[in-house]
Image 1 (spheres, rainbow, N blue to C red):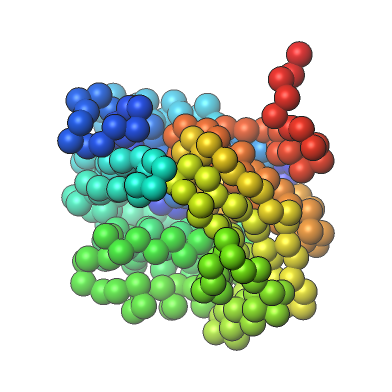
Image 2 (tube, helix red, strand yellow):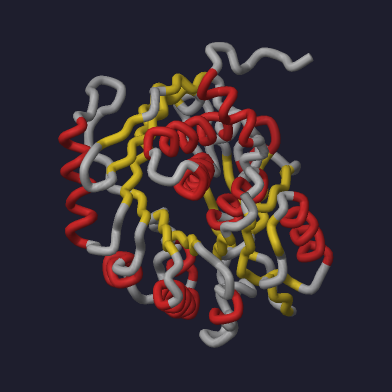
Length: 335
């Protein structure tokens, strides 16, 4: 299991959330969590037993020290976590409830990560012995330098023969450094092998998306990005903030694979659900190889479980994920 070495690259953040579903204007108490898209993926992979490292930066203060502790707790190698005197990026979340949507406020400007020099990392050394590199569209959105570093990392990973995965993760509030995602992302995605697809635009509560529609959307991605081998879709139907349906779909250029559809009632925290899904895809492709059905089943079940966990990280074991896949009553108490 440890033979595959996976590298993720992105910003480590602290998340602050009002307790007990309160709104920003109601509370003076906040829960804190560490997170960030690429860190969330790494945490799942480390928890599942894969050999995973993260390249990032943390401040030289107690918050940075505490974040390092959390990474190590989830079996993430911190050899490529730099330390500097700059600040930790923050984001604030107001939880959705019933028919009220959630809110996110970013406080990431001038963070240590956003200010990194383009030549900060020695990617030859970081990728030595690595087999996989994962990034998301959040990283190049943070700053121009972050976008340039991401481009260098992708080119080096491709040159060294690593598999490269990307989750588009569009965040409109972040793309404000001078270029849009349409100007930056297509070039970065040209060398990627596994990517999240654009879901067909339908009302998922009232209509079923056909395999043909998923195949057309996936094939369009592959036509635009010739190195792409696998396109994955997360298919979410929203009844209310606390009640969703959830299904995963994978397209390999020949066939559409679907997971079963989960009915997620009484959602605890949906943040990180997409990262848990992407981590499950990476785990599945590294573990089940060409058994794409097992891969998408694992990814979707993993993400379904994340919706019942507070914080960004999906702190479940691979055994719990397999238990959900195979059990009709996975929520029973273990005794």
